[in-house]
Image (cartoon, rainbow, N blue to C red; front, side, top):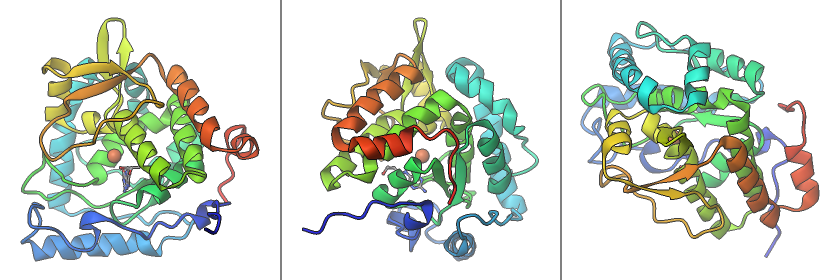
Length: 303
Ligand code: H2B
Ligand code: FE
């Protein structure tokens, strides 16, 4: 077999391989019968397809329907954060000045992230292929969708949308200890074979999407799937889910999201501790020179 080419720059990470609903919506998608919604989604997807690394992300004028969805989601979730979100999320959230009256623009948020942690946002048309998505993290880049979930179901989306990305993921990416941890997942993915990519996808799922961190004797959310879902947050805080210590070396359980909420959550002691665990995991599959090149960079290189 030919050795895999390791991307040397973000341009070499393909943002065009979209899975699942990307091309056409399935029957169980709330927008399945809504042609106007599908057309709008396609127009927004084309912005991502045309975007070139280094260019500003084009601003989008959101429709009144889309704004209404954003406002509803933000309003509901805001009430849950004080109690259920981790301290780092609560510290970072005000940096973005979210308001129910305006859907934030990816370009503005990307600039805030660059200033805070050196991370950036790159637009993507839908659910990106896991390898490309994880490789992006090695270049301190988060691939984000720009379309809004369907207005018939403001509390539900079967795929990432702009509410999930901006409320769940973006605030955490302004915290440098969290970023170090996510960066290690990305660097580990550069040399990973397909089965290691699958393992890293689960690691990403049980940390960045559904992770919790222990604060005193309480479990607080840092995973975007909890922070962007009213029901998931309530379930994590007051349901009868199981809490287990996170271990990147252990076999990770099967991921599920269609059958309701998570049965178990994995717990970090801190992001520094999680970053240390993931660095060690990364060193098992990534050669030292690549580890050094990617993990010791003081200022990111956006080329
Ligand atoms: N694509 C997009 N657009 N957003 C995500 O949050 C995302 C993705 N997550 N592709 C990835 C896959 C994740 O589920 C893992 C790494 O496969
Ligand atoms: Fe996500």
